[in-house]
Length: 87
Image (cartoon, rainbow, N blue to C red; front, side, top):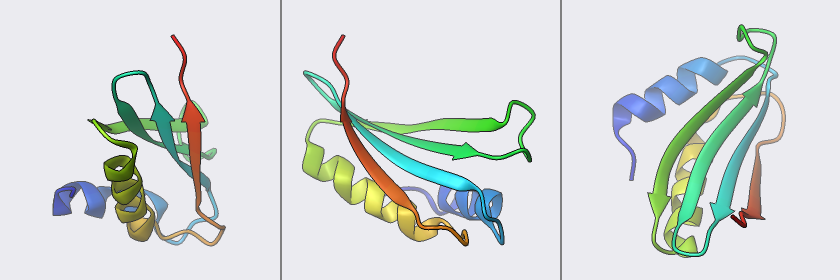
């Protein structure tokens, strides 16, 4: 679903840490976005936001979210959050 390089980078960013990390699945009218958000003082802005892709079905996005969640290595619980994005 994702390249090994991307999953490795996600793993590296969260390796041995206790950062708050969320995988956000954002449903829009015509697509579903997948985003990764980490909140930590390790980042200059205190926040890392990465858009991981856009999917035509919410099922595909949820499968991708599970793939990303499995690559995270943090001490805290990983949360997959599903939201409706109205524009």
